[in-house]
Length: 66
Image 1 (cartoon, rainbow, N blue to C red):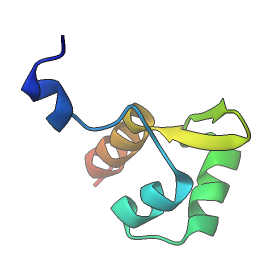
Image 2: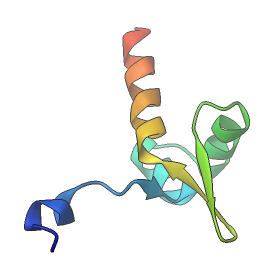
Image 3: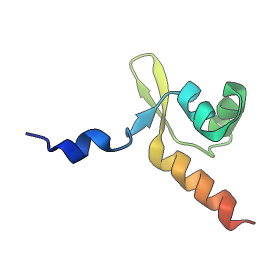
Image 4: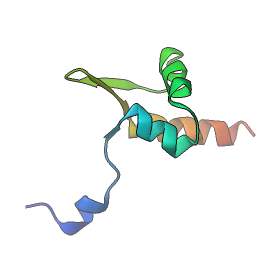
């Protein structure tokens, strides 16, 4: 049985719309980032989701470049 801490963890996969909201960009920007392989997509059925790890890694890499 999962403990209550697991319910508070960030999801492994997020929608492109949610990724755009988290980064403060338009969904078309997320689409371009996926095309450039800045983010990692995962297909689930007909949905193309973004891995939370790749989103976090992208933000970290951008912060390090400054």
